[in-house]
Image 1 (cartoon, helix red, strand yellow):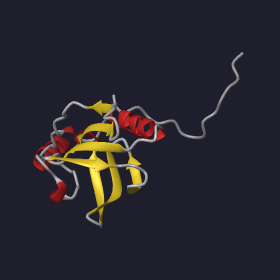
Image 2 (cartoon, helix red, strand yellow):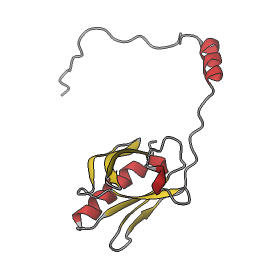
Image 3 (cartoon, helix red, strand yellow):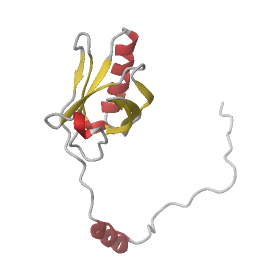
Image 4 (cartoon, helix red, strand yellow):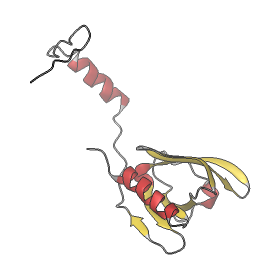
Amino acid sequence: MNSSRPYLIRALYQWIVDNDCTPHLLVNAEYPGVRVPTGFVSDGQIVLNVSPTAVRELDIGNAAVSFEGRFGGVAHNLFVPAPAVLAIYARENGQGMVFDLEPPAPQPDVAEVEDLTQEQGPPDDEPPRPSGRPSLKVVK
């Protein structure tokens, strides 16, 4: 089953914006794949203002949050894998949600992947695919 985190981030973002508040993300800046301006990281974390007026091209996808933001007047492209989002909240009142810390998914070693591929070979027991156009029948 997919992680619920990206869905909750999207829903809470919309809820915060609909209530005329400023959405902020608390991000684990040390999580693998995070791209944020390192000069603004404190204690391994960074708070990002993701309000519609503060960012451009915001994309809250299932895998990551990405957008263009300005830091010290300089534009940066930010990329935050969904598991690196520690919280989303409204700046004005602190309402939002804190997420559990997720460890990075283990990445298999290239040699291990090659060994598994050679051992398994092509799947022989795969059912044949039907050919032709699909058709529908009326059932009464």
